[in-house]
Amino acid sequence: MKLANISTGNNLVQDARKSVALSLLLLAVLVLTQPLAQAQKFTLQRLNPPGSHYSFAWGVNNHGLVTGSFINAKNVYEGFIYNGSTYKEISQSASFTQANGINDNGIVVGDYMGKDNLSHGFFLRDGQFTRYDVNQGASNSDEATSTLSTYIYAINKAGNFVGYTQKQGERANAYVNLNGTVKQFTFQSNYTFAYGIDSKNEIVGWFIDPNFIVHGFFRGVGGKMTQIDYPGAGTTQCLGINDLGEITGLYVDSKNVSHGFIRAKGKFRTVGPPDAAGINNSGVFVGSYIAKNKQNYGFIATPQ
Image (cartoon, rainbow, N blue to C red):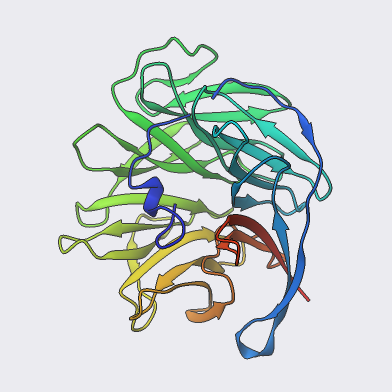
């Protein structure tokens, strides 16, 4: 869900997703060391489920568990959980399942393509899959009807979560579910996508203005929204936030090159990979990049 090497917001609306099947996979790892700005360094570990030829990493919790997605040998888009040594596959649809976030209780959130050709959010906890639609609520059945697509991108330890909804041909609206109560919102009535939530229920994401320029945003607990733009960038997307208020994301420079960033205390720091997605309280973050072999890989970056 990104610009450049990762499709923008799943191309704004990706309608595709899979049926719960968790299977153990082995690890294929590449470890690199690259400098961050201001001389900070991190260890970059490639995340590449066996048999995959395209992978992404979206979320990471404070225990180091990572969620992401990959395209398998049969060209099916599936989710995964990575625990530092093995992968577990998440498959809830015949065509597309995406694992977007994970909280400290191990609850995974994401979205999948249903039989109705709409996207539905899901929760995965202790192997139990639950479907979620903003207009229908939670359900253990995949037969429930819905009129719009629902996506879940992040969940905090309290179980509050964010994402966006969209009816085909209509504006995408961000939402937050706080203790079971849903609040939909936009940034000045623009297409709006919520991607991260911290323990204070502060939210980050991005929106598209009337000139089709992408900007990041921060939404405070009281609902006040602030636009975030990397200085001089033509595109900014905020993709994650931790409990320290550190925001991750990406920006696209004047040469149309994507860069990851971390924003802490109002100051931006560019990181080596082309995007930074989820981040935990230790400063470990995940994302994706294109390698020299032209393959897209997920990664986990650990500060040294």
